[in-house]
Amino acid sequence: KLYRPGHLVAVHHAKREVVIAVRGTLEMHDVLVDLVCASAPLTSVHDVKEGGSEIIVEGFAHSGFLKSAQYLASVLHAEVVEALRANPGYGLVITGHSLGAGVATLLTLLWAR
Picture 1 (tube, rainbow, N blue to C red):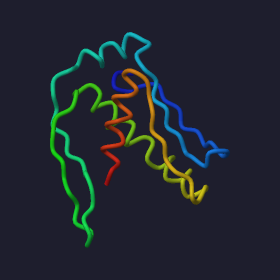
Picture 2: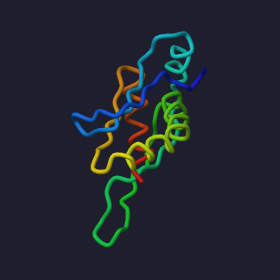
Picture 3: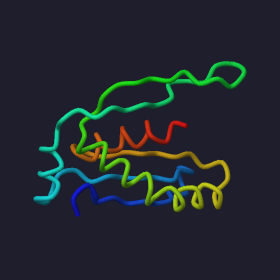
Picture 4: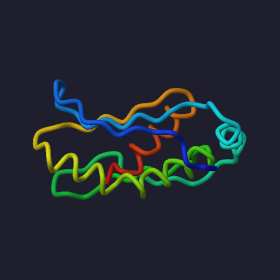
């Protein structure tokens, strides 16, 4: 369960959104993730210039949150892509509380590309 935060993927038809909600600290394994706070390198895309070249941002992130975000990125990608394909014109909302907010933010940065 370590680095596998509670989460939900839902389709909100009234708002035309696919929503990923990541739960905050609740169980002991979540506390352990909170405590794995060494910094880890993170690379993301800040923007895309005219012509398609990417503006890359490099920095550091809380390693426990980053490992959790990387896990969610790998296990949710296909499900989220399918939900967006099945609902043309829907946006993607990634949100969370506490631990979940940090993981949601990093998941957004990982998927920026």
